[in-house]
Length: 112
Image (cartoon, rainbow, N blue to C red; front, side):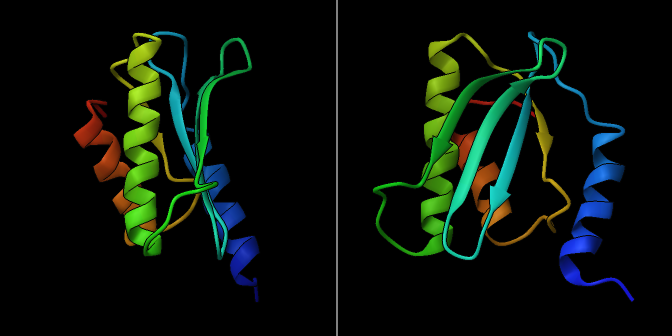
């Protein structure tokens, strides 16, 4: 029987086989740990991280912080003239903090 981390890694490999970002439409990748959440825009064609955001000094509930991280990455993406992205949930279920981050990014102006 697979443990939760291994199951997530299997799901992530399945998602990454289909989700690819490029310079015009980068991949919005999410990583969440028990305490923190991170987001980054990645150009897979050139293998470069274009923008990254973490929840370093944000205060509040975890889901509220995730929404702020989503809005922050959208703001940084607009500075680099990025409007459309491909969402990569990294094998996590689309609810809770992952959904809050996606909602915050949409409110900030990103389309996916």
